[in-house]
Image (cartoon, rainbow, N blue to C red; front, top):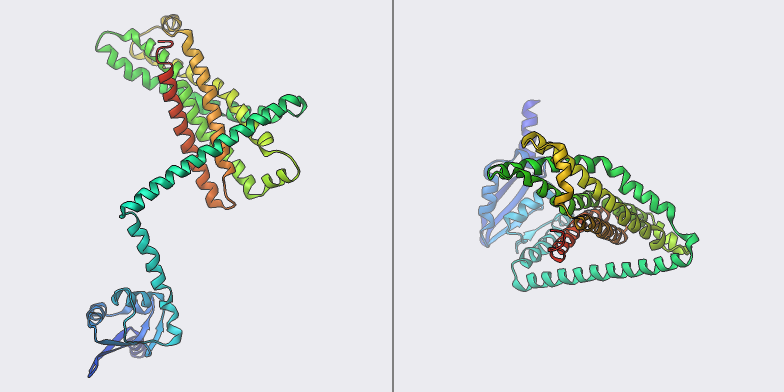
Amino acid sequence: MNSARSKLNATDSPCLRAAHSPGGLDIALMGDWTTLGLTTRDRNLERSLLEYARNPRASWNLCELKQLDHTGALLLWHAWGRALPDKLQIPRATQVYFAHLPQADARELPRNCEWRHPQQSIARLGKGVLQLLEELRDVIALIGRLFFDTVDLARHPHRWPGREISAGIYRAGAQAVGILTLVGFLIGVVLSYLSGDQLRRFGAEHYVVNLLGIGCVRELGPLLAAILVAGRSGSSMTAQLGVMRLNEELDALTTIGVPATQRLILPKVFALALSQPLTGLLTTAVAILGGMAAAHLSLDIAYSSFLHELPVVVPLANYWIGLAKGVVFGTIIALVACHFGLRVKPNTESLGAGTTQSVVTAISSVLIADAVFAVLFSHVGI
């Protein structure tokens, strides 16, 4: 039985037969050129195949093949230099394995060459700029619709979406207290330890109150809260609107005459614009508490001295700047999240990509707005 099995394996294993003829070299392929059959092939098979493929006068005969699949066809395709030889005898049933290989190479070639051509790179840059301008146009159009919706609600106060706004404040504000408290406290501790270690070398430990007060009230508190809310609540808003787009709920609202921007987007914008200053204020307070505790442990600054000196070194204008940043950051996050949620296409891949773009764009926009605030109010409250 073992001898019969070895004989069967020897017969079915892929092999080729080469014979010289007046017209050149006749090569016949035999055996199973399949995924299973090629696992038992001779080591010299590919070497002989490549050697025969270099001969321009070689003629190939695939009529004696017992079986062929995509693996065997791909092996022959690469050996032939990604092109069918001029002299080829191939059965009609076997041609299907080579039918899509030229189209696959044709699709790959322009993609590889596209990046190397300077004109294609310029075209990609221009396409990106045009796409950015289109995004800005859509955001401006969304702001315009929200403005007219606000005017309409002011004329009809009974249609004001109070419950939606309060629910948004609860989700973006109250439910985020835990993560905001933890991150704010740790940032205050780290900032106090690092700055205190440097200030101690110059005998200026008491200036850690100035650094923590100005840094947390004016910059770190509102910025950290905005980044965390953008990743937490902004992505949730985008996903919610995207799922409604997938389920055609937005189209259903339009069909029954309910404006989607007035019932879905406007409450989110108002909710974040109202809750973001409060979350920023909370993050600032907790960061100062963490910095105060670290300053007491590392620099031996008393709590009473810290609390007494803090209102003196931090002018009141810094608190107003921090609250104004919260309003602007919350509005930006809500607008960006709703914009990308409305642009989701009816497929799950677009939903994931839209959520990712929403978070990245929201955080980037918040950082740009923070830089603008720093330039405009560089001489205020310092």
